[in-house]
Image 1 (cartoon, rainbow, N blue to C red):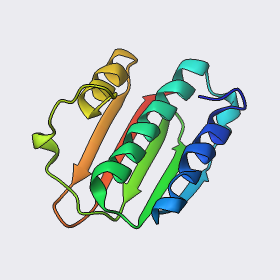
Image 2 (cartoon, rainbow, N blue to C red):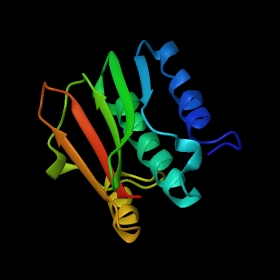
Image 3 (cartoon, rainbow, N blue to C red):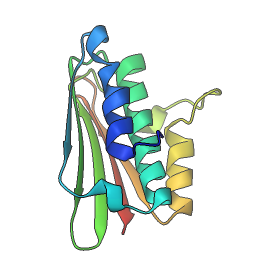
Image 4 (tube, rainbow, N blue to C red):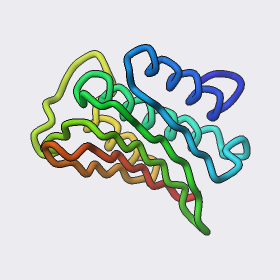
Length: 131
């Protein structure tokens, strides 16, 4: 994550999608500059993994990254309009964080990563972390 904070880091990573023909939208409905560093880093890693999936596998034309907060949880959503997949059949790969590793990392921080997807219907990666 960059020194300028979570929003700047996400904006930077999402700017790389446009040249690939993927329209990327970022919405943040909470002051992320006030998040503890560990939560900001987890949120960035989750978004980064979701966007990596969009580029590598989804064949998507649009992706929405949103961050919102209710009374006790921060929620990150990465939603694409791509081809989707079966989350139960995600292979383990070396060289990047991966969905399973991300879920394990999140769990160690008391957070939860959920992936909802169906073939032909896009994918939503959701991170929920207590704040």
